[in-house]
Length: 110
Image (cartoon, helix red, strand yellow):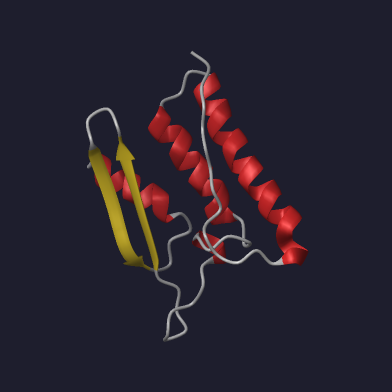
């Protein structure tokens, strides 16, 4: 079976001057996840790595690009789930974490 991964960059407004950057970021995230699946990796790792790409890209409201809360601080949420056994892990309002998705996975696994 040919692997498939779908990535979306959020539901916010698209700023015209960053449009190509948004497309490039989503494409890079999808390719990262797809390559993991193509090489026999598991779906959870593919999803985690795709999200890491978005968290590392300042154009997306995730990780490095997170918007500030009312107090002017970054607070981030992340959740990940394994569809095989429905285990999940989540974190909420975390600070000083480069990739909250990795912490959510750690919560799921531990």
